[in-house]
Length: 138
Image (cartoon, rainbow, N blue to C red; front, side, top):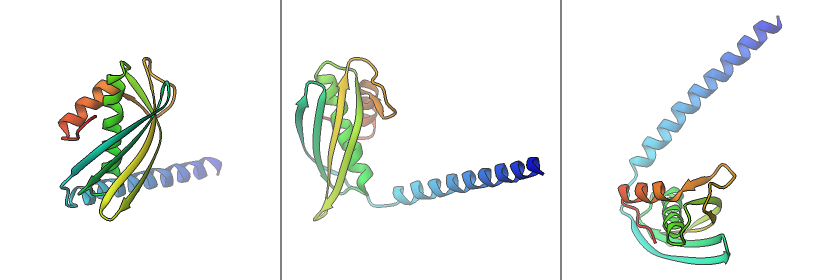
């Protein structure tokens, strides 16, 4: 009886996972069909501490908050390299759209070694990806 219940529960979870995957694929396809004509604005960088940096970026023509978030990450990656470090860790990003302009206020730590945490970036790899995707860096 318990084994049958576990099999049913596992089947339901698998079905939910498959449905989530289909849903994510539909979201990606819908996003990619949106008009995208980016106009990247200036990047404002503020050193908050020796290894803590805030970035404020703005852009027009973004599809959604993800585009301006990507722009902030590209700025953070290039800044990390400029400061002589190889890695950054994303702490938070706040986004807003004001009068057709998307803005992001992001904070990263920068370091020479891979920092602890789940949201780390390898600055060299990220800068290269930004260039390949046509996203400017600092």
